Length: 332
Length: 288
Image 1 (cartoon, chains in turn green, yellow):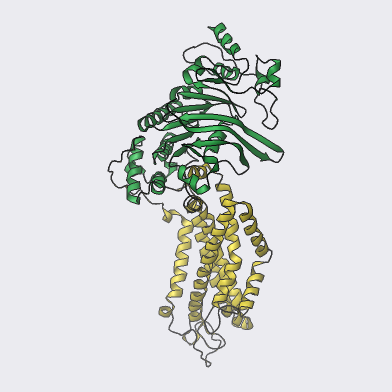
Image 2 (tube, chains in turn cyan, green):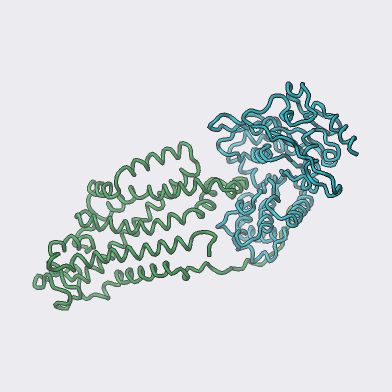
């Protein structure tokens, strides 16, 4: 980690009050991201990764509430800010890129104006300045003929082009951090690769940090340095991408890696994780993964395993993480 | 952190405009409306008679009699002149009376839909109270209390008519605010006013505009009804409602006195409905 953390999420808890009781989709998430870093947040659907991202910027739906925890960005706790002060951070310091580039763009507003809106509000630019900046940003994200495309509407763009527009919008105010919510999930694999390269390159050039939510492990490997694995509203493992992918210290991470195909090891059979994720309304006691875990012991059912440091910069929430290492050792 | 370098760029080029003239309903409606409106507002050119001048020597003239194109009424006033000048008053009042409810209803509806919570509850309860009364009953009662005349018509129609716009806008915004582009706008640090004004309303205002066209029809009917009851546009200013009311005594002998202003109301309503339908097709986002 380079220097002090730029964004530090500590013990974040989110509660949704539904008709049939209270659900806790995020239950004690801690994360940090240093300046210029790219951190991946992986997990299956419903693990709370997107919600974690949204709660950083206070974008939770009205029925969801942050019940405890802090989101400290450059020394200020974002959860305590008033709406108007939060609006000075949103877009200006922390920008967000969404999963569906079609629905995340206003269908009746010209794309250029959508890109130019941020600089006009946050950087105090005149209309002419912001238009020039938008055209320049469109060129930088690889949209051909930006002067003409400035006045196009989102439906005239392909999925990949729309996501480029989203990236241009995110970069428009030179933010310090960009939150990405599965930005390439809706795209073809070839376009996906182009977009990821573009995003990684632009962030590296400008020193922008990146928080990347995805369920796609190769994407994390391509873009991120650090990775955090989420399961049922909690972080179960954290570390550098290289370490976590080569030596997972949590059986869930191990399961995720084994259930995804690996180009470098063709012919290897995929091993699915048995069972399905727990109900967030009544999560199992102890370790939330124990009903699906082949290494589970009696103590896994009784105690909630805390996240603990087990190696230099390796953190896991598994009581018996050595078994993962044994398992990998047995394989190779 | 390095800043994004800004290179000088040429001004954006204008793409083609949406082709409104390819909507047959819209074109037909606009053409019909243009004919009606230009006839009404060019009334002095189209009729040599003064609509208010009585001529008691030529009362109840038939069509074409004594040089009166559509005859005269019981006081010998030229029906054709009164029809044109009456349309002027009715159209003017109907169109002005749609602007205030449109603005008030759209603003209140957006606030209710976007913020929800107690704002929504308060606005919706007020709407419920207004909606509990039939439109005409409330308008007539209000005009009766406020006193007959043009100003009372504006106030009464605004007080009653805004609820339709508020309900349409609220419904549309309640759905639209769940769209991801609103979340994206929020994540970009835009204020609520800006999100409503620049992002949500342009997406949802179409419905209100289309409704406004049929609302003008309803306003014309309301004005005509009020004038028929003697509460609307005051004599001697000619008006279709007063003409229908005055003519009904002579229905068996001089049918044109009621039928012609009645037809004028129907044709104007048809023109506005066509415009409304055409606009609905044209403004629906994503189609061309």
